[in-house]
Image (cartoon, helix red, strand yellow):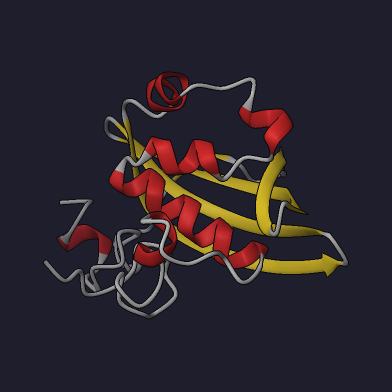
Length: 157
């Protein structure tokens, strides 16, 4: 099955973008690519991949079950990458992830830290930024799920 648009919002198909990373066929070329693949993995509920993309120190403190339980009722809708900064073996990615829990919409605005460890980019931690929390989409705005429809005719119907 070919998924038209990648969940991460890159504009590429899932096959061209995040699928190879999630399947372990290729490594992320940078922290932004890893961030995008982590978002896509949350969308498809591949918590094993998410665990593997944590740096070793953080990974040792987590389990797949904990990751799955923390995202149990969350429906991830879209990702906006705002900035990507690299300094030798560390990087930061600022993003907004939009999601739905029950009938409510939310945005997580985060500044994430990454490290280049054992020949690959890995996630270490993130700091939630101002503007996170409940989100009220406008009825005539583009839907957060990237369907191309207006919110009122899609997720807001």
